[in-house]
Length: 232
Image 1 (cartoon, rainbow, N blue to C red):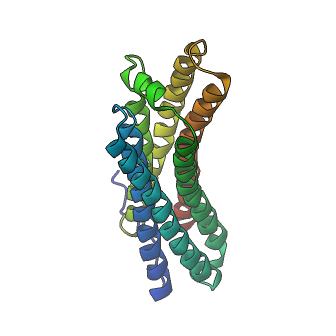
Image 2 (cartoon, rainbow, N blue to C red):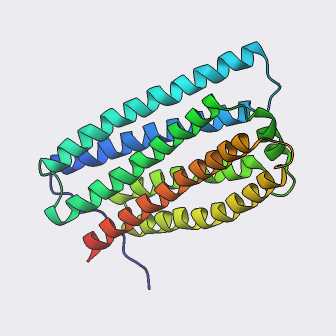
């Protein structure tokens, strides 16, 4: 039996404005994640004065884009609290926005860890690992956030597609969790080569990256809850 195309039952201009702001918000979040991925990939290069300058610029851009996302976040919170969307969905949308905000916050925190530490050589090692290279883990982070954006885009067009994309985010989270533990195992195999503080910082860095995917997964759960209520 063919599943009917189910779209979000918008009731007016305010609701459309909210969805537009949500999509703009997700675009800003993706820019933050892309900048973070670009920053981390630079660390596998040999250190030079020019590279250090580029890295500092990347870190500044992450902070700037995260600040822009915070501004959009505030606009969304005000609009929703003023009464846009059905009252029984308001809390779910606020939950969705909070978790999306966590994505940007953890991305910024990851970059801040890189600012205060000297992890270049060990990150190069992780990139070179034949088991679970770091870039595979980073790709899952990017994919989870972009799949969340695609799920949001489908809200107005097809609820079934939204649910499918949201489930995809959860599946990516599970894959990334396995990759995280393998990376941590590799990290601790270097404990005789690095000092304890660096080891702790590197562990925190990987766990903070993992928090990005966890936040995307929580956002997808909130989105599923929203569209399920709409469909009921």
